[in-house]
Image (cartoon, rainbow, N blue to C red; front, side, top):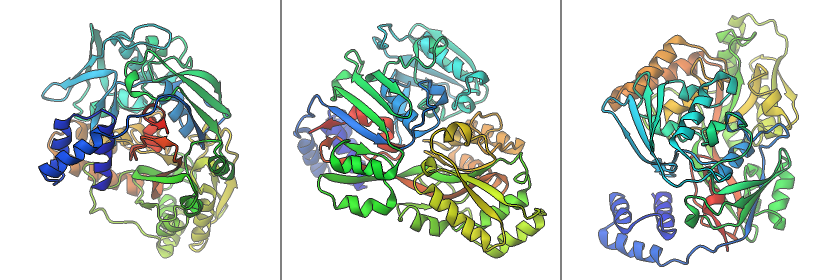
Length: 528
């Protein structure tokens, strides 16, 4: 409750919450009206944010192959970069509620098959053009084209018709989906002039900052966009991202003051940084997860007994303790945890069992040749150590797992979604439908396990249109069982988002939706 209250107070201090809304939310948490009123007064009288300055961030998760095309964003730096220059229809607030951005109103038909988004007037692109409903429709249409290779393909394919009329965008779905607005918060769907059809990598959007320098794998710099529609709530003159995939270099940059913020603090040094002067460790538990993914359509992973052998051969608790330093929880081979609405906590937890792993391995008929698992330091913090732990526990079950070290640069282009067995990560999504639609629907471009299951697809569509929450929870539970027992996902742990932040950075809010305030740190923070 404390984290939720801190976020409410912070929002009030920054002028984003009225007295009525503050009192309503805090009393709903069990706080007395008198105390809520006093808290509001204290928050409202807090010092105003300071304007100006350049915030610098040292980032893991960038490669020389990165592009400014939002459709192609597949790692952390492109995610952060695109949300710095780009703006989406809606966003998801830290408390899980929908936050209006380019859309100022959202409504639906009673059956959740038709959705209307009223487009905010006067929003300007960085090239001076006014953002229109036609730009929104063109953007969504581009992501429905398989040639775009969009990570959002799985979530926009269900839109049967798109129409722009005046300031209104109407989306008609092939089947009902009560979560459709949350899907529109996907970071690939930043609105571009003409939908980005002519030049999707131009880096021209309607976000808080405009692109100055774009050197993939090196640095990305931005200047505040003076005509930003929400300019009053942006405080920095600019922001800079420096790609620092090496943990040691990234940490040293924070300690020396070269950067104000770093992401993906190595759990092994959290204790060291917590004791450093002028630095705070910020950790947000959410939906992010570190994984090993198998392509179920390629030998030997097309054999479910082999997949089950590997799932039983991983020691999840050991990984949470040794790789995450306890800053996370164990996973269960499906991408949903208690941070999601309608999570079924009765699903049996899969444990390390060398005997069961050996039994499934023998049943698979595998020839005993090395099973190659590819990993890189930047796949996730501690990925190589995690892979080696996996190999050791698999060896105890008689499974010949061999680790192949890959370079960080180009990993998300040359290895992930290409090689049949590798280390990877997911930041999670606000709702189950979006997570499943993005990565496990048969037609999803980012189906990185190549999992294709007609029953699973059928259930996913049924869940979208089911407005009875108990029935919907049951459908999601059945989907989880299918994926857990038949899919190519090995999910040993859900990670906290852990970053190091200088005391100079003010306005920070721990956001369970993604790293660095879910990509919004530059637009919401200021420097003391």
